[in-house]
Length: 250
Image (cartoon, rainbow, N blue to C red; front, side, top):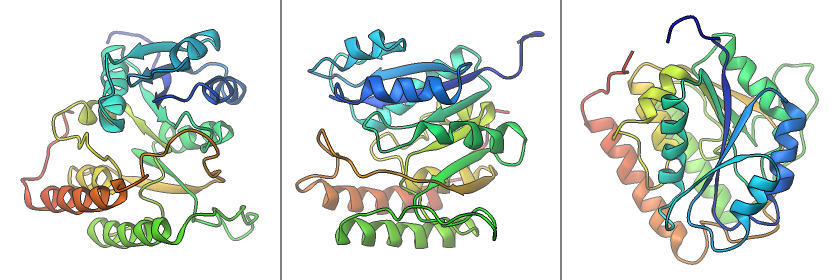
C-alpha cells in the first residue's frame, strides 16, 4: 500500500428500487462529508434508481438481478477493500438513516476507539448531559424482534447492544477485509454479524441517533418475510457460536 494516504473513506448504499429517495440520500452524504466517496450498489432495481444515483454524483455498481441485501453489502465491502479504502460507512437508500451522523460515526472508528461504530435508535444518550433524541416508532412485532435480538447479542458479546438491526454502521479496514470472506452472512446480516466479528476479537461501540420510519418503497420485512428472517437469524447466530472462532486477515 506504500505511502498512500491513510484516511480514504467510502460510503456504500445498498439499494433496490429506491428512485424516490436515493438522490436525496446522496446529497445528504455530500453535505455531511464532502471528502467521502460514495458507491451505490444497485441490487437489480427495475426503476430509475441507478440513473438517479449517477445523476446525483455517485458511482454505481449494478447486480444483473436481485441477489439480496447481504450480497449487495458484501459487494460494497469487496469494492472498498480492492480500492484500498481505510474506513467505510454503510447506510440505507430509503431515507431512514440520516447522513448527518456520518462524521461522528466515522470519528469513533478513525480515532481507534472502536473497530465498528453502530448507530442506535434506542440508545437515548451519549453522555449524561446529552439531549434526548426523537423516539423511533415501530410496530409491536418489529419492536419485539429487535428486543429479542438485542438481548441475545448483548449476552453473547458481553456488551450492551441496544440496536443490532439498524444497519447504520462504520468500520475500519481490518473489518472491511474480514467481511469480504465467506464467513459473512449474506442472507440477513444483522445481529449475527456483530456476534461473528466479536468472536474474531473486534471492538464495538454504539452511538445514539435519530432514524426515520420508512415512507416509501417496499420493506424487506413484508408479508411472511419476518418469520423467515427470525428463523434464519437464530440459525445464523447459532452457527456463529458453534463454529470455530474466525481469525482476522490481519
